[in-house]
Length: 167
Image 1 (spheres, rainbow, N blue to C red):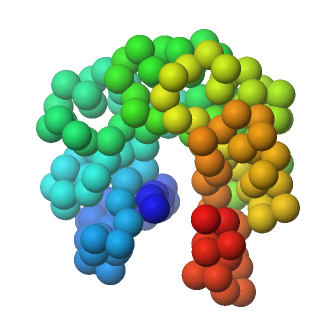
Image 2 (tube, rainbow, N blue to C red):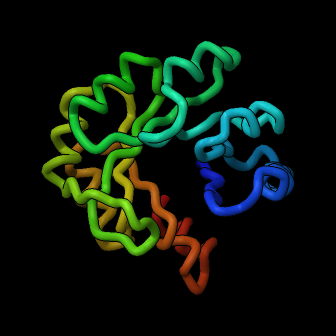
């Protein structure tokens, strides 16, 4: 129901064009969130932005965006989760729950760390990193609202079928 556009290594102009194409293709079928770049999200009319540890603060972005604009934040521990929630985050991406090859700077929190984060916040938490069809249920059992992953869909032989399997 939500797609995050993430392409950290490409120039801004190309990212803007690419994201515009994604938004056009998604239409009304799913909400599109832009990773890191709330300026591009606003310029293109995306539903929101996902902010990582090194991006602008949630509170700073919240001051600049219209009501209803979705802001997600990455967290790796309960302190970060509580801070992001208090700053105005609408949801959290918590992890790395499992090892992943998609990112080089991951710190493993495991299911126990995920459960701790889920227990202290009231906003939805999505388990991130190393997500597979086999471990999604464990992520939800730990208290997460759902799962989010890159490789699970991007590297699948049948990305659409894999997405449907996760729903």
